[in-house]
Length: 300
Image (cartoon, rainbow, N blue to C red):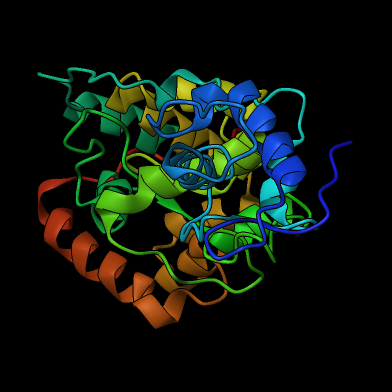
């Protein structure tokens, strides 16, 4: 375990022995310096060491606002002292762009899903329209997501509530723009990848990663793999998810949008008018989509 007598960094005492210890750790984690070169191990707090500390805080420690200081009992030192930082492993974090030209859902796809759930095609389309405006991909071809900081706090057992309050707190909110969601997800994944993937809603129907089991996938990694493929996988996950929750299934069959939104979006659904949005979307789609035959009793 690495210990230092006093802080190292901008405006800190910067005792040579402490600076040397921090420089050794920065060299160990040279991969996570946000592009900054590792410093020389010389015991001097110089410009290279300052840049490396800031780079590590941004990248390796996933801090929203790096302060350039390594404190004796702070989170930056705790991260630096790790023997290894693997970083996010799932391929969703790679700098790739997936092409989805021609990726559509046909009326037959919707009809099959509606028959399975015993609801109207228009009801399923209304959910997709409300959750993602029928566009499941971002500009890089990744599934659209919304990162939920209170879910990350839950799945990481509150370990990062103090050090990373912008991405880990018991309070919902603080989402930021859609363009920042993957940045927030990646920062969370630097701390706990499985918890991070569970804490975002994914794709056309914005199903939470924590619901991967009900959505038909044994792990959240497998669920995200499927979300990266095509819209039909999003629809398949939605059918599994609704079928696994009897109250939700009954609500969509009966077009009880308040009950459905409460089950699907949570108890605060009314704040965002989810039920109203679904009802209005359903009314737009309903004239063009006949109801499917209801399933026989006992069939899910």
